[in-house]
Amino acid sequence: MANSACSGGIEARADGRAPSELRALSIERGFNVYAEGSASVRWGNTIVHCTASVEDRVPVFLRGSGGGWLTAEYGMLPRATNDRMPRDVSKGRINGRSSEIQRLIGRSLRSALDLRAIGERTVWVDCDVIQADGGTRTASIIGGFVCLADASRGLKKKLSLAKLPLQAQVGAVSVGKVRGAMLLDLNYEEDKSADVDCNVVMNGKGEFAELQGTGEKGFFSRSDLEEMLLLAREGMQVIFALQREMLDLSREEEEIFDGFF
Image 1 (tube, rainbow, N blue to C red):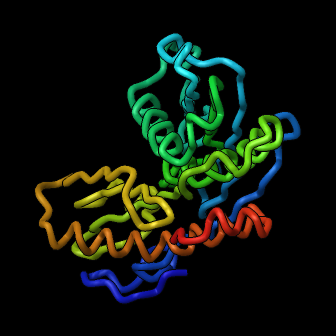
Image 2 (cartoon, rainbow, N blue to C red; image 1 turned 90 degrees about the vertical axis):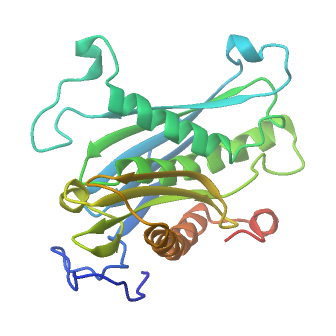
């Protein structure tokens, strides 16, 4: 785990982690026998099940374009949190938070896929939160990429492609400022009391797909942002290494990932 020193007043966190340490992170790949790709992510007390499904059609606005699409759906099971939440279907509409998160997941993973290479097909990435303790959107992106990589393997074979239809390795992590200390990978208690909360989505070259930074209790400085991004980069190295290990890359695939983070 990442272990560099961070400034601020918190030396020890409630769960015993150092400021720059990730929670225990594991990925179980291939848990769903039907999906083209699946991954169950356990990150501390957060558990997210992700699947990738491929359809031989695209949205109306892409018909005839020759290119494909990727979209995501995200939801929390009723007892994923301390209090039971009704399913969106029982309310007749998706809630605003879920809608915002699934758009983030879709944008992040779409940047990793070569949409022209897959033709007029859609990859659906579904992320279901079984248990939530912070970081559900970042866990969804991490697991979603593993699913996408496996679905890409299937597309490579089906379409006789020369290489995987992937453009980048993608991962995500949260960072924040809590009571003056910069912390990596916020759990729920840290997140709800954070002065600054930032979700960072990066590719394997250290470039950003998305930054979601919010001054929850006021403003934050450029130096705060730079410190958070350095912390995120350090944690991302651990995440990318785990994704690669779980994917059990072939020599050919190693060459495709070569040059990534």
